[in-house]
Image (tube, rainbow, N blue to C red; front, side):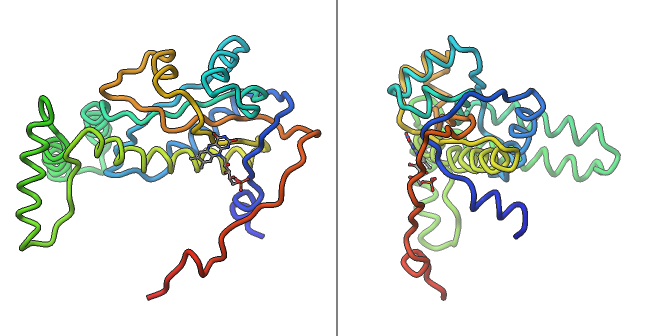
Amino acid sequence: MNEVLEAIFRRRAVKVFDPVEISEGIREQMLNAARHAPSSFNSQPYRFYWIETAEERTAVARLCMGQMPAKTASALLVVVADIGSLAATSQGQLEWMRSRSEFSEAKIRDYERTAKIGRILFMNGPFGIFGAIKGGLFWLLNLWKMMGMPPTSRRDLFKWATKSTSLACENLMIAAEALGINTCPMEGFDGRRLSKYLGLSARYHEVVMVIAMGKKSQTYVEPPQWRRPLDATLRIL
Ligand SMILES: Cc1cc2nc3c(=O)[nH]c(=O)nc-3n(C[C@H](O)[C@H](O)[C@H](O)COP(=O)(O)O)c2cc1C
């Protein structure tokens, strides 16, 4: 079978790990795979927190309600949706485009304009006032014109960012599997305390997932993997 498919089908959420050394090289490959995932407007709206030392792992595992995958992991990755990174990301892309000969001035100006429109569309203003006005306006326009809806609240923005963040998580887990590292994605954590522990901003950051990593324990008996039948999830039109 194709190697990528093999890693996809072999990956399981492993609940107990034996200790394993995750080298800097492996860590970098996993994180690079994560950030190569597609993201809405290429905005990459996430941050990664790599938790490695025994002391930090113990603290974060406690905030994951002491779950076994967290307690036995050799490293934990806290993946955070970051809605405060948009301006800096588009500025970074703009600088990158300017540093490369393949982008004409017209293309750069085009990107600059699109990024500006994007920032306005994604802005919700103080107390979400602009978001509410925008929501009403787009709702009215949508009555006669086909269009997508921009995020109109902070909740919407986090929902938007969580989609791209989750794709990065999946890329990381598949890469980990291909590199011989087992994983367990977790949403069983105390988000408020974990955010505080990492010094996150409640305004811009939300923990999406914690990924426990290690080597599947020899004592761990993996349950058979069940999935809904394909015809229960698929409709071909
Ligand atoms: C968003 C998400 C949250 C999850 N949270 C937890 C968790 O908190 N603890 C846990 O042990 N497993 C967690 N899992 C793992 C699932 O239980 C697991 O993926 C599912 O049972 C299917 O098993 P498989 O991945 O081995 O096929 C989570 C998975 C996802 C995608």
